[in-house]
Length: 302
Image (cartoon, rainbow, N blue to C red):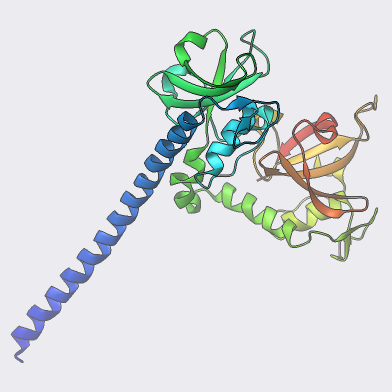
């Protein structure tokens, strides 16, 4: 083989390798787009297939559905786990305030008087149509979204987080850190609770030594006790909760004092990760529970 032949073959090999690499990247981008598009179509199709099914408060399907449970069921069928309460779902995903910006697959929320907290919800399926489980009509029905403009509170887009945006998580350091905090906490699930536990041990935790530990392992230094921890970071509202936020609570729902006695980490999907009493480190439901009613403040330190 001459030197000229060797150079030509090497050049061809490089061009082919580059083409294959670029083709793979394009293919991955197309696959991600197809995945998102396909999921929105599937969610809409599933919602339409449930029209006529019976309404029943808190029923989870497949033949009877509550209001929020219809959305939970439809998303579960495409492999996306979301919350199971209207209040919880109203905080999830990306907020869509304008009715004109709602897209197929979005969760739409309404109030009977057009203000305050949502009282019923559904899934937008496109072409000014949405599907919801109606208590008044006793079944799953399809309605025109525009007919409910006076009751419309807003929409939430959850499929972006579960599909396309997941491939870009490396571009969001805060999201990565929050996920790491939760992973750090999960490895201690079941570790016993001990009031005043030393910050140097992982054999037991109290609420604030637990948060201090799992944040430290993610590269964030927090003060030792819950009241000190509540003085750092940025204050946020319950409706803007994000994974990794610290939730500070008073002693009880009926306590007249807002003195902070407990701290937990918001873990997403209406749950908190924390430690207390007999379960030790555990997950607890947050939305609509006494934990939520005890909230004094929420701080974001990530």
